[in-house]
Image 1: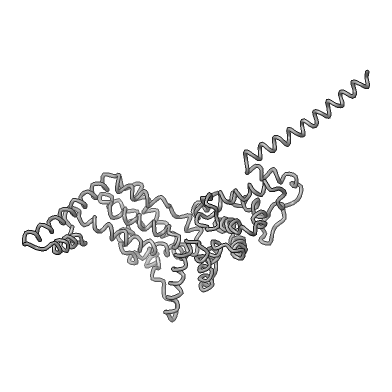
Image 2: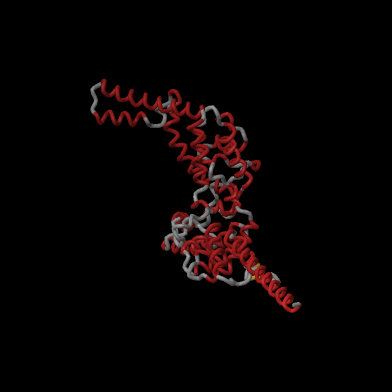
Length: 399
């Protein structure tokens, strides 16, 4: 009887042990299914006693992949966090993140992504877009050495996006042009504008006996920016000094000007002209252009000035047309007179010049945006004061 009781107890204990083991594996499976990030960490728990080994760049990485599920989750994390939206090698389902978005994530998060996902990206040599994406994450979070290594590996494996970003890290402009041309040929569209910029610089260097002086130098007497380099120096000076409130009653031109400047500053092609790209990208506010345009349409000052400009424009058009008809002119003469009435300076009454000069303000803003961008490397503090002044004008002074 005692033997039978002992046998039953042993069977019960064995059953409980098997149940506990199954419960542990079931719990781990559920956690891995619901939380991919935790799955990546848990999959390495069995190797926690092994020290992480640095690769050739000095970055510590985890152990080699142990199962297909963990590899899949790691590659999905790369796509969600670091894929470039214009990489032609991305599947259509991958949205991608801009440089600004990727630079804005926490650096620890970027480092953790690289540590976990790099071994899997290196194994997927048929998909160099993963190495490129991790290289871009490293570059935008100040690990230039690792970024250059990963861009080069991805480039050698056939990534046109990596060609383009590697070109931006090279000191040899002619070599950069070669990489950019490969990127364009491979279908990476942002490289097209970067290539045009690089070729223009090369041509200017060839035409000059010596490197020309920087015409956009931001420093003048007393350390203040050289406002004369801008097409609308009074506005730029007001932004710099924080005195732009005097323009708040008639904001149409300043707002159109600011929107065009910000569009120029955030243009991908502009990044090729900047040395400290990471710092420059962090200064920018992509939403500023939209906010400036919205203020024109929604504030009483913006709507009122726009209405006066449009009314004056229509008045001058009909006036010019009536004068031609009064003297018996032809339809062709009416068209010429109407077009002439729209020229700058011919709509000066009731704020009418504003409608025409909005077009000019956008052109000036594009030009001055380039000038302001080139100021960043020489005098980032002056750049920051002007840009913050623009932002304050849009958000605080125009109501």
